[in-house]
Length: 330
Image (cartoon, rainbow, N blue to C red; front, side):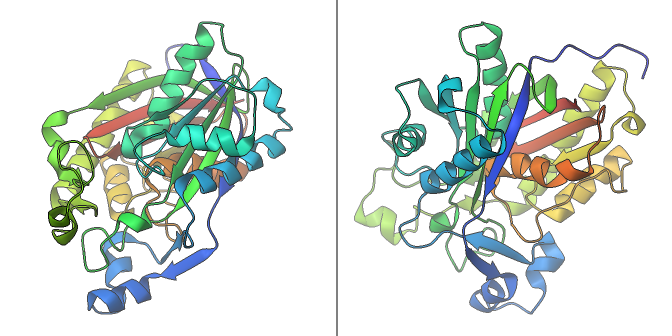
């Protein structure tokens, strides 16, 4: 490390994770798909994933995670000035899932809005919060990354049905905390918008008998191209961050890629020359929880982190959106 690190723009005070009780092993999905045992694990590293129960929505998971975060950090609702919800599986198109979360929490009126950047949603939300707090008008923000992906999965779709899981993580973000955000590198390329889509129900393709018949209300993905783009975008993003601050991979204690597919994470690590414990692969019992994967992985890795550790998180999702952030443990 040859240059000074940037000053922190904000910090995560506490994280709360909530996973729904339902567990679906990969063997059940393999039976539905008519593939051989072990097919999903071999291709993704995923052995099981959580599933919402009937009637349980993204906001319900988010509320549980928010309460867990507040309790873990002994944070009072009076300390929170704004709520951001990072989700691509919200309760409904109108109103925002953030407003449903605010209603369930029963807090005083405050700004509440959604961040729609799919798997990069948490990183985008952190970047937004760093600006909000930097203006001095807000003291602390609650970011709720919550995903109920399973209602949008077609059971016969080999591209998506075995990948995604449900779960939520909430973070209280202030100017000081246990892990500090030092820098961000975010991006998007709308030219890749057709890689991952859910076409039915929006203003372009309103709900109709035809959209239901065509299964347009389920997620669709070009898996081969998503793999290629995800590896390329996440790797280059990390490399830019390292070069910007004259860091080598040996200076970084933890690299946490988007927990979508173990094979993608391994490929990112291989390109970066990191194939040891520093490369966090933690989706075997969760699946891809989209925007919630990074904060869940941060919290589950936290017991192994030490003061001063540099942490890089990186992600790629529909849009296409991607990002990389540099953190340091306090």
